[in-house]
Amino acid sequence: METARCPSCRSESVLTVDVLTGEGDGSLILRPRHCRAMGSGVGIRSPFSTCVSCGFVWTAIDPAALRDFIQRSGEEIARQQLDEFDRGPFRDLPDTDLAREIGAAIADVDARYRERPSAAIRRYRELRGVTWDQAHHDTRNWRRLTREEKLELFGWSPKKKTVADDFDSPFP
Image (cartoon, rainbow, N blue to C red; front, side, top):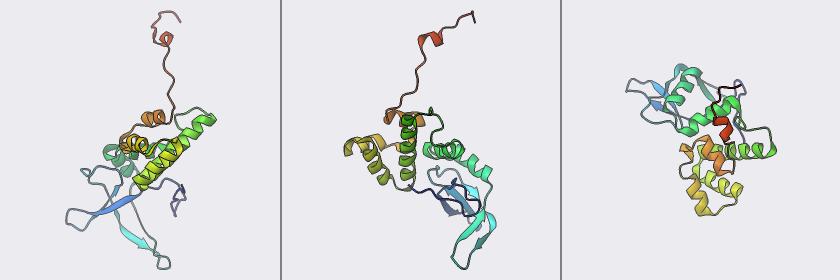
């Protein structure tokens, strides 16, 4: 799936947001997708700018306030997207071919889910080779699944502590 880039700084850290009206005072707020409605969103600083050649419109918001809002009000998939922006899709996996394959698969399904959940179900089914029923079952709560739960669905299980690791010995 193609990643959008910011036209200003060329970063791939681009979110889909909804622009909402404020409390009847004419103000506008941005609410990133997959954030709970009970949070108000992040206020937009005026003014808006637009290109009369192509119609592109832009404004500015405080990126720290946006990240804070997502951490407080975002669903699991929104918080994981921030983590992916910061540390990449292989962030908690070893440097192996299998780990890279699983990390890329999860990133692909996540990106499709953020755009259109039905596309994520289809892609999950293709990647895992499971039945439609199984794909629907596994992805029905995709936006709420933790990173560890997604890794497990793709067959990755983190190393378990051995019994010796749990032994509290007074000796070094």
